[in-house]
Image (tube, rainbow, N blue to C red; front, side, top):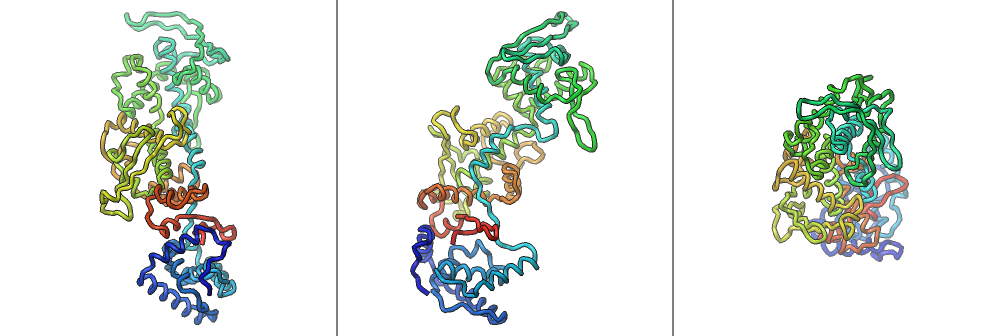
Length: 485
């Protein structure tokens, strides 16, 4: 069989073959000879034609670059290795399709095939995950967040006690293009500090700021359950084993107590002193920055969701393995004018963390100004996550992406299994794993026309055969993702 590479084969395949041939050792040649002998033995026992005298170097190059991807735990996989090697070398199927039929029969009788199914991650898919609102995962979670948010914002904007805000009737609230019209109920006063007041109608104009009470009330009005009579008069009701939003008959004192408990829990999660919320419990003395920080933590899952998003975006941007991400520490980040430099010390090809082999990967903002960055900017994700760690956990060192058992803060290194669950949750699919970040980014860069040297600068590969193992294409007949050889 000729060693010439047909012109129709992709240029990167030819480059991979040349690079692999330059790194083939005697041990690899012996392993290839044993593989060929096993195939011949199987072919004789099953009355199948043996592989004709072929270009041994073509088979050796292919196995050297891709044997570990396909695995060699069963004879069927050995057979498929050699069959594909023959095709990659430019020859016809030596078994005339019988091997393919044999593998199909094995798949039907023994269940799942052992060939890896690795789906390439795409930044657009990760972007859709980033654009989702970070809200509570429990039913009605966003509605409960809005209850606390509206209570705080209206208390600050109207300069009234929480009890008056909790007593606002729903039929007195009207949202218009100009702003919000509502009627504040009367208040009997509290001792000498809060005098009694009569009912009054007020109009709040739209501010366009991040903490705009008009926008928060409008969103709340769209989500209110049927039967609600007060603006904040709702809660969760258990029905059929699930909790669903529903109107409540609780009086104003009960509503005030529930809202205060909700705000105290958010303050603890945000790393704020609950005493800073004041006597009324709505943080009237907080700055706008601290108020926004408090309202963000009305979502009990926000910190974990931000960690998950940072894990996915950073891993995809740097084509990293899970081990490299799980080993990152805060001290491995260095701020630059355009974003961050990330030092990956733990790598499979550098287990000792030799300083000369440390991979420094720049993670820059997607736009010149941070305000113009896209939703999936990995540098912005790092900015947000570091702010969360420093303000919520009060840490300046330690693991960058730790495990969070029970949403209670850092609790050791992140396991590979949790990394897979993070990606599946972000993308909403169950056919991805932590390896998908590395393979997906390499495949996407190659599809965009990047040369192998530039891709290697991102992924840290120093060998062409190792790099080409991560290129993925899909076989329309089998639905399996496999190397492009």
